Length: 130
View 1 (cartoon, rainbow, N blue to C red):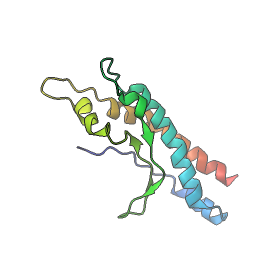
View 2: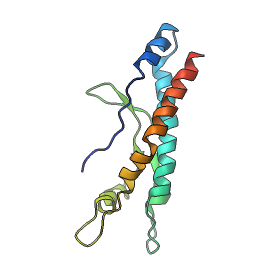
View 3: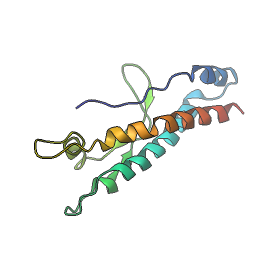
View 4: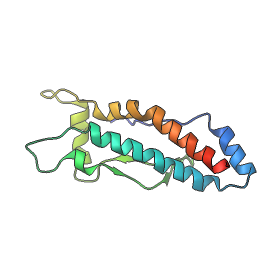
């Protein structure tokens, strides 16, 4: 399964200014990521398909992780998705099967929230400057 992610670039200048002002950059970065993850979480809930015949619905189980650090690069990130018991079925709905057309709800969520999440991250970091 391919991994979708949003790269944030162009915010290095804001981070440099934060460091010069002795602001806790990591704390503010975590706050910015959590604020952005709330936007993605709401949109994923809105985009998630609803099965009227089943008892467990993906739409009702969208979750965000805590802020994590990539071991290889050291970058901070937050995962938004589904918990165990549900996430093993998501790829079937997203990419489809021989008998089921793909619904692309996760890729649509990424496209729909990319600009807004970048703006929220930048705004949160800018607010830490003032």
